Length: 389
Image (tube, rainbow, N blue to C red; front, side, top):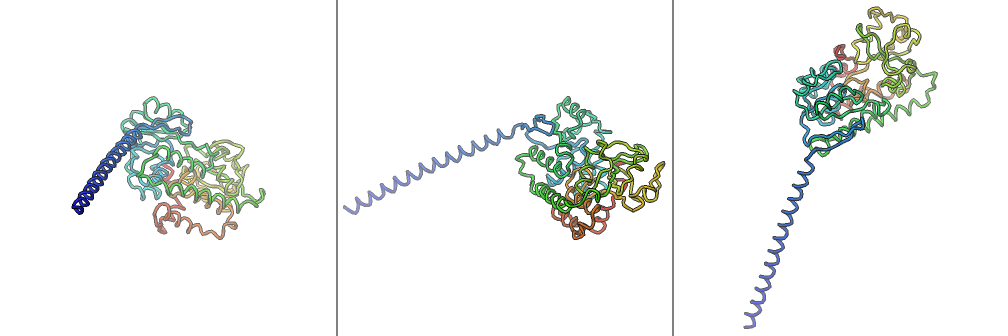
């Protein structure tokens, strides 16, 4: 009898325990379902339009999903976009000059789909809104100084994000960093994008800039070569150089030179009489110009006689390299450009640095590209066609 009562008491306890666990289980399930509903609700709330502030200081309302992107006028941006997102997916239109650079660089090999993108939605910096609308962009990236483009896009009801080339005083390292930061806002929360490489390049560029400045710190002003940059130069448009308030000023200063055109502003046209007065020690030609160093050495440029200019006589005329993009404006190759230019102007101070090794390592690390000898040559000696002229 006593055993029976103990067994009855034990079974009662078990029943109570089971009932308690069952209730707790139901409570737990309810909480999990409640949490899941909360998360789903949060996802729905975060999936709506977002507002960011671009480099013009204007608030831009972005759609919940950004699937179609047009880049207008901002020529380096396709290469920066591809690096940032890891692909060219999403791009539906790019500038013609960007495409010309891509077709004559390594960018098209890494992202071949760029070759098929339309460029006819703009001409000479003017956007054809009707053609642009046919591309059905969710957003357009453009150079923030182009007020006309912004007005046209606003009138058409297309979200437009302005990227500045002047916020960092034409410092290409910091300009690139600013573009990466703004791209981070545009694509915030997009887990498909691994931004680590882009962030690493920002730091890499700052480290290279610090190294170069440190090595050049003791170079006296009178020992710095006098440099001129041939920014645009062809038979139709004449010669345009880079004065202050433009990228050339940064390049020359950071590399330890003196800009002969510093008294001028922007990218003004100059004639040969002005060049003779400057008589630069070194000339750099950008990839916006079809001119090559041999054109100067052979003195075969129509109507212009370069034979008496010091840079030509001493064999100090150089073409900016072209990697994933032109090395004169901001790009993902900017850290390499800083080192290349400093080593070109002051080879003795950078004799211990094997630039070929640095370039190969950089392309392998950040682009996953193992450069061949032919590709290295293509970077250092770009074709005329890369100018798009």
